[in-house]
Length: 247
Picture 1: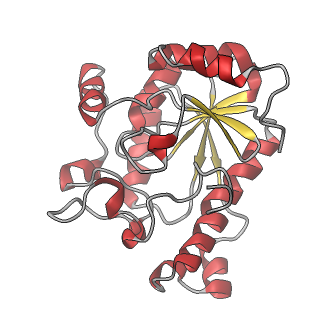
Picture 2: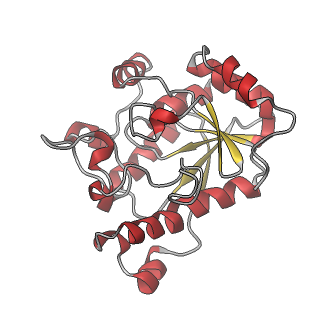
Picture 3: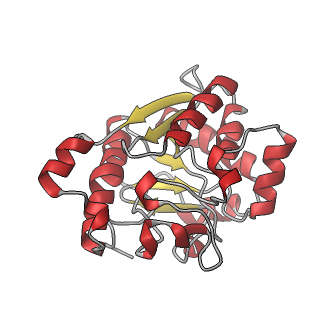
């Protein structure tokens, strides 16, 4: 992948410029700065509608189709997520580009078993690398992406609390428009713009990924603590290296 140092971009100056900007203006800055080498990623999770809606307000952009939105479909998402993705794409002019692992779910399970069932951090790391990190990195490289935006927020995990508005991640720059947003701000944005909630939100989920690694909040766990059986907070997509390198 390319060099995230971006020789024509002063990272410290860019961070200082972005820090006071609201989310929509951070996205507009990235569109203007990176043009066709800028994209979004989405999981079509509980709060994904916010960033998708904002991105669609940017207009057609250099491609004439709107900012590209990359969705890593692991093949293990809940059926509610697939339906939610279809609903949002009907409502919003999303320039959606779906990417997947080179290994089908059946192929992966034949070679490695049901990695999420072992209770092993190493197996979970392999699963996330095969189904999420490698497909995304390949898609970013193929599209010559220099900067991608995601909807991560600082209050979600320990790692995300250390993020800045713009961070190098595995050879590209990662923009975080919603980094300082609270759950309340997300909820009211969706209410104001009449964006539909993910079907699992009404069932007590505050975050959702793959069906086997997600659970509703309960008295003992909430948020990202409900993911991956409590073994991890991160799948690896937002980490500097492959599941642990450079953390």
